[in-house]
Image (cartoon, rainbow, N blue to C red):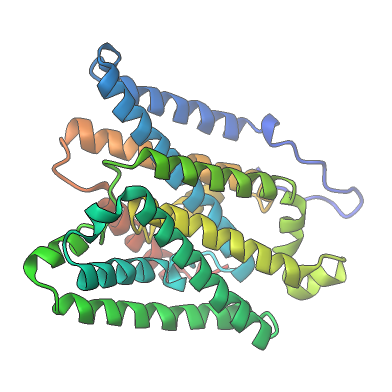
Length: 330
């Protein structure tokens, strides 16, 4: 379905609740969630049911955050092959974990506890990225392309420092850091999950009233300002939302570099629209569906003998090379 309109009539008011594709995705996600929770008669054991519900909530939170953040980032950069991870979120996360283990030893994470560690990781990542965003954009007159280049440089710096420190760790310390190199959806802390859900809900509510403005911002800075949109201020606000969503999801389960690229490619292929009132909900639903279905397959079929994160990164990497070869950069 296309949103193209003739010059003689205005674009119809969008109502996402009337879109059949979103309803189909919602029903599919509901079915996949029920299958994930109740597979094997889990309703007979309250303990197993609770574990699966917590894991399902984590999958939904992470999927929604990554899908929405990637669509927003691609809107600002006007580029379909870029994701927020290019700004170095995963590298900063691994650097923080490496420094903590290097300084405090193997007992650092157990002693601190899951919730304080999650809050510390999230706070540091958000503050660091916002400091970079504000400094670069003010000096470069809100040049988003320069911001991306600076993010790539900082990402390389973080990875280099993390790699250097990891070489100084003993095997037991490195094993702890290595466990955080790939996203894992097992053993999520319920308090951390509750905080993550509240943060995401706040940003999603804030974005819900700005779908039309995001459509205009997708036209570019000059065109949006000509149409009366305070582009520079909104750009900083959206970058702050992206930083918060990616930081929360990364601190909760670990880095997922290519999930966003995979999700947005499927979203644009299905929705065939530039309207963020359709793109953002669709990206959230598709991302959640990928994680829930994938985790169900790996837990029930492969008995956790493989890692869902590794497969997602592999498929996303192949998709990135395909889009790059085809020239799909806009």
